[in-house]
Image (cartoon, rainbow, N blue to C red):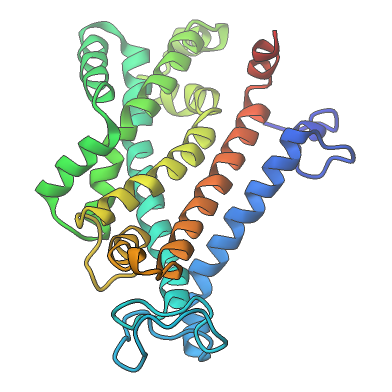
Length: 296
């Protein structure tokens, strides 16, 4: 699809007079890129000596408040909170991107096939996806985490199951409406196979809302991962992860050790807010009609 000059202002990233929603989207994009930068360059900063090894605790004094040596202080075990907070962004992005990608790779094809073919397959998939959708996402992820165990891939699998129905329903509904268009009927009349119709004619017409779902689900997945880590079901203990660090920090909070709770929690909150603002901004760009309908 070619973007014309008249459509460029709708992108909302570089307009001369951006609206409040566009400004919030820019803030969300900046926050998201900041955490991506931290995730990619954390090992480099450690190699340069700017960050301690997040697993090292024997060389530090436990529960030291923020100082020039330890910007975010140290935990009750002696871990450098700043280092673990920065490396926590890396673990969060790995799990979240993998989880949302898995759910998208499963939900999008199923939604296209179900909406295009219809019949008993469509009814069976609708029943299955509705059954999964009615279950609370965190409860489903916790149950699956018990089964698959701890680890980056296992945590991503446990989290991704809850998001498959969302991709399925959005893509299926778009497919049902698009498959009656004239260009689809023309392709069928010319003898195009089901695979050709799905891949060449339907795919790019039914995935407009997928990037929006991807960012919003990523924001939610960070909270779910934090919940799994808090319950001891997320990543291995040696991997820096915000939820696990918050669990360890709560034991010291009543004694006035506030920094071990504040900084991991603040990082998690900022990352969720950034992805949420980015997703809402993308939703306005992709579905501009929904904004007008909400104002009525």
